Figure 1 (cartoon, rainbow, N blue to C red):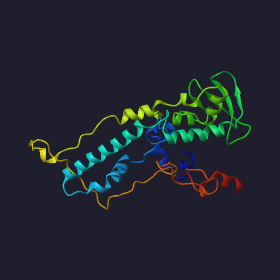
Figure 2 (tube, rainbow, N blue to C red):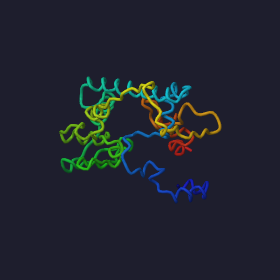
Figure 3 (cartoon, helix red, strand yellow):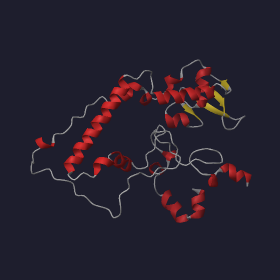
Figure 4 (cartoon, rainbow, N blue to C red):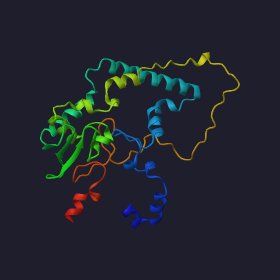
Length: 249
């Protein structure tokens, strides 16, 4: 905000009058678990792109129901046979975090309260509270799962990291999400009740976007990043705005 005030005072004053929870990630009132969707409508439109422009609106609805039914069935079958407490991707990320955590220095003050050496600033420590599931690096609170510092403290206390995961990461939760069955619609069986009318469509000028705009630094489902700095290889900025470059200059 300080930089924005210097560049454009009117824009800074406009944003200051709006509650930060509506536009700032740091002020989000709930956990995002590392997931950020800049525009869910654009994501949905891209997903149904092949069936969105059907000649008849009913054909679009039927195709959409079929697409959702297929998605639920595939994921229901996948999670039904999946072994382990969490998904394969989450387990692989946890194994990597544990590997890094074993190289950190932990100072125990109790079973649940620890100081762990910082991974980015040697000689400095992060405060981990396993009882409250917090870490001063804020990864624990944001993602709902142990960060590398919390994993180091958990291993030092002879506990298991999976016991400190939010319930949404467990396979049992995913099975409950896709437990419902969507029944396809038979258009020929529908009858006009002379009450249900189509929505009023407002067509905006210009060609509609087929690919949504991604927020910088947000990782996609395939593991690809948004903008990656060529200087420090971190997500969320480029080499022009890198802090490491500013220090050198």
